[in-house]
Length: 407
Ligand code: T4K
Image (cartoon, rainbow, N blue to C red; front, side, top):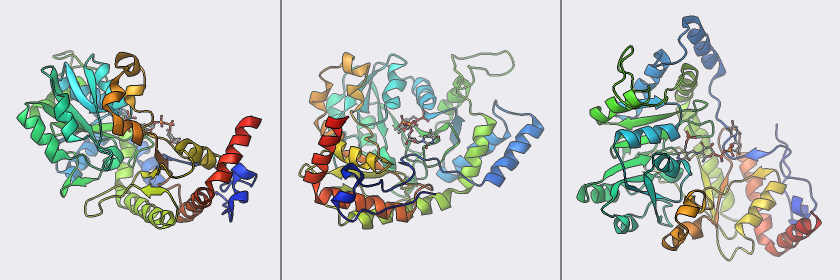
């Protein structure tokens, strides 16, 4: 149990010598744990029937339930979203150059580069944090074969605009939907857009299967290739018809995925409750804006994303350091942008010139904890810490500077 202490004024902040607001670390990405009884019952079934992997009954049931939820023809479970992206990219026969955001988790870019396809980094719209369609159009060359948008924070890309560009320029459009499970766009569930959409069920994601992912598509022919590719290319005993890899989801992961799926509505409720607590708590915090969700759509509310004004008096990294002292381990996703990570930094040293929004945004975003491990009381205390710190930024800055000097 986390014991809480609300700072009344700046001298009570941990950076200024007070005790931390939280006795235990408050982490971004704490896994949501579904009903243990149901999970353990599934583990017993699995052990009793001695079927542990290779398209077992839980994996098949997981796929059926995912398809029903999203209204798609196929939603093929895989071992994780990174391998899912690699397989989808290969099955769709992308090559040459593919346009992607730099403001995404590095796996989006790696899934291309791993196959010697060049990720061409595109800038994002600062309001949405997603690919800016106008910039996409400018980056198309004769070598471009596709566009992969990421639905960052589960807030969908401008899918209509991207689909129009892809159609007009004869490009394959796919989505990294790692964040966007159980979200909708124009009333339709994410999963059914583009040629394929790839979900992550990693431990830190809204819905987790320990590790895992799924590739959703309405394209039967693509789905058939993906099914072969995730299983070494086997089309029957001893018959390999395709180059493949091992992208299979295990039964233990599918059991966790199914159990998490049964708790989906409760998870959304918890995340929505925390999001509203942040909306309320941050309303009186100076220099901070909270990225909002469009509640007329289905949202998973999995990411609490704040941006710091340039007038805040503290840098983003100072705020993160101040929070760390309070035992709040906030994250700077997706700083510094894929283009500033290797190997892309060496391959494209000047990429940043075309990514001004990405560079500015990744310097001011902070992701705060939510999920079932976080209570509205935690949110209230955390917002109180931010309020006190950002009301007296000079004192916090001095305290941080003297801590750094002493270290
Ligand atoms: N595309 C996008 C847009 C993605 O965001 C991701 C993954 C992918 C593709 C690839 O999906 P997968 O191949 O993973 O299915 C974390 C996750 O590892 C990663 O899955 C996720 N995105 C990314 C946004 O976050 P790190 O490097 O920040 O992980 P780490 O170890 O620092 O953990 C994050 C936080 O979660 C920490 O506060 C600790 C906490 N945590 C983590 C785990 C694993 C727990 O409390 N318990 C746990 O079991 O990447």
